[in-house]
View 1: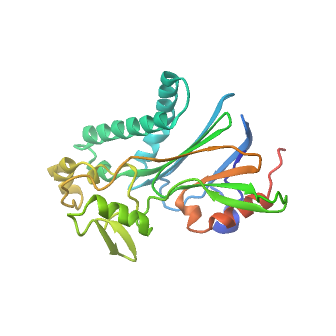
View 2: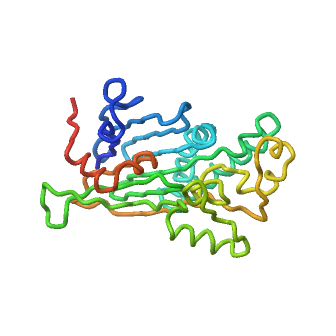
View 3: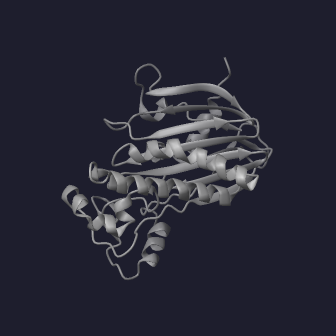
Length: 290
């Protein structure tokens, strides 16, 4: 299995050499090899990504920050250690281990927000989408909050070597999707403005497109929304209860003979490319180890 982020210059244009802000050349992991790259979209880079390899497992994280870089950086420092801690306690990686790690990371960040509010009130509105993948033995795990996405490329069932099929492994938690809108509305039947169409897109409370994240504390903790310090900083919305969650969608899947590679990327890539176009680019541009 290959965890690939390149080549991206086809969809983003060339910048400083190969079109990328930075990249990691091909490196080995337990089940194949991987590479990483990022293109900076904003004046301040709010995103983080990481890969951890060991003889027994490979972890991948893509953290798409919004409102500031603090949440993505926090997840980058805390999620993998919690995964390792809970995996050791249970004796193996599992969906329950992943859920516990996501929850612990969220709770720690909310605690940091409360502590930091007097000196940095904006941190209450900082959040991050969170996409995690793991290969452990023959098992593939994908967990997601927000609208980053993992897409697997595999050979067609007819075994044609020249054909690749895209298989989406994650769920987009973006209210632009009708299914997600209905899910959010069903959880808040007493709030007719829980999802609002504004500035050309659907948004939770007219503010944010994603329904799940790490952080965004002011949309999860009503007491923070009512805090006088935060009210001086932002435009709080009346909340009876949380309108976002940090509950990840988790997919587990056996790695099969025809599976070739997985692309883990934030929505910046998927706004430019379909799942099928992305796997075609990776499939037709193999990267040889130099």
